[in-house]
Amino acid sequence: MAYFSHFHFRDYIPASIAYLKSGYSLEGFRRDVGAGVTVGIVALPLAMAFAIASGATPSVGLTTAIIAGFIISGLGGTRFQIGGPTGAFVVIISNVIAHHGFEGLVLATIIAGAMLILMGLFGLGKLLQYIPYPVTTGFTTGIGLLIFISQLKDFLGFKLTHLPGGIIESVTAYWNNAASIHLPTVAIGVVTLVTMLVVRRYIPKIPAPIMGIVIGTLVALVFGIPTETIGTRFGGIPSELPAFMSLKFSDIHLGSLMSDSITIAILAGIESLLSATVADGMSGDRHNPSTELVAQGLANIGSALFGGLPATGAIARTATNIRAGAFSPFAGMTHSLVILLFVLVCAPLASGIPLASLSAVLLVVAWDMSEPHRMLRLFRAPKSDSLVMVMTLGLTVFVDLTVAVEIGVVLAALLFMKRMSELTDIHSLDTGLPEEDVIDRATGNERVVVYEISGPFFFGMAQRFIDIMNFTRKKPELLIFCMRLVPIMDATGIEALETVIRRLQSQGIHVVLSGVTPRVARLIQRLGTDSVVGQENIFPDFSTAIAHSDIAHKDEVS
Image 1 (cartoon, one colour):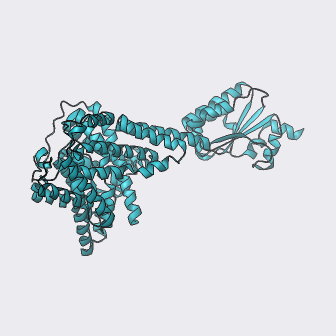
Image 2 (image 1 turned 60 degrees about the horizontal axis):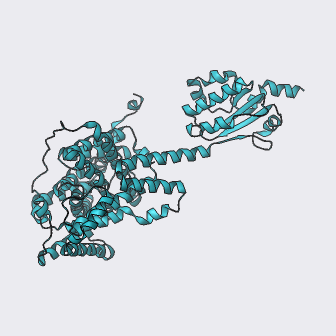
Image 3 (image 1 turned 90 degrees about the horizontal axis):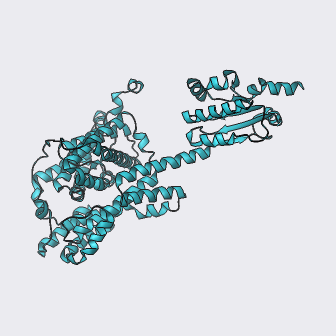
């Protein structure tokens, strides 16, 4: 309830509303339309390609770009975000469809959308930003590799009715069916790929995917090359508005979808906030992570209700939007309307697009996602970071993306705890160290031992503290813990402190705490630790602790 007492709807006002209130000019409208048309053209082939790679139809990908893209731009917390289907979801979507069918994917997406909304309302956007770079590099590289392998089927024209799920099984299937490679299809794919690379290198203002597909399609038509197209495999794209989907979830076990839903929510959150951060860096703007996550949740629910795929912010399309001169979130909304116009007017033209050309587009996407130079750079990082990256990559490729994300985050958290515990130091104070002459006098007394604790006192270093406090030889009469450099403690740290205090007290050693900060003092009081050590043995500073010590007093008298 404490959280909701601080909840204000004004904290979740979409960026689009803010720009309308600030004054929306004709010049801004012109820039938004121009950028929206540009990004819409770029997004068209990607939406279809991602859907096909995920095991769905091209129209499903277009529906996702229309519905989710419009909601993300209209209700999001960033000025330039472009949303829609992305490569990060390809592997998880294909797995969900394979195991639970398309209705299972719809339900998983709705659940993920609800999770994203809650994450936004509870301000968890900042936590997602803490997911380490080695983890994101590991699973994006792994996803890129999996997309690359999966697209070789259509790029090379393999006569395979079904591609096995595992990467080893897929490579084995390719090897066993190498004789079925269709060279005319390969030619179309190579022409598309080369066209894209040339355009990206020499004419970057022209959308490379569109140009590659146009050239590839023209080559197939002009030379009459027999190859599989969107029309021959999917029967074309319906020229109609996205329709509300009738939902029947009676045969789906909700518990079996929870892991996939969590993965979709985490991936959507990470990629959308990463895209928003990249946009901030390019534009000098600043996004609202909570509003962005709420919009992502609503967009995923909306997409699922109309039979679409999971969606998130797309980094490449968002960057294209900025470079095209977008002024406000209305550029992203325009991009969705451009795709809708294509569906209503030009859908029949898409029937002739060769699948090899779409595969070529995804091969380039897979390479961009993998970013080999970033992966190789991480091998020069600390070994722990390299280990996290390699394990996340390996689990993504050889086990499952869901497992990879979960274990990758856990590994990174464990390594973070280890590094935090290494920052915490427990040492005996010798003469010449800070705390003025009073410490020098105390440490010069063999019956008085002073230990200083510096850094967070949490569960990561609790056992080390217990081990250090194990006196096996001559025991002191008074032990003072200097805690002035302890900013925080957790329940495990408190438990370790109490364990040590009780052990020392049972050995006849008097224990005193000094320099306890107000924050730590409140925690000690709430958990009852003050009754264990004795309220009279807790002092605000070292000088006061020594002044009230019977042993120190006796030494001064003598």
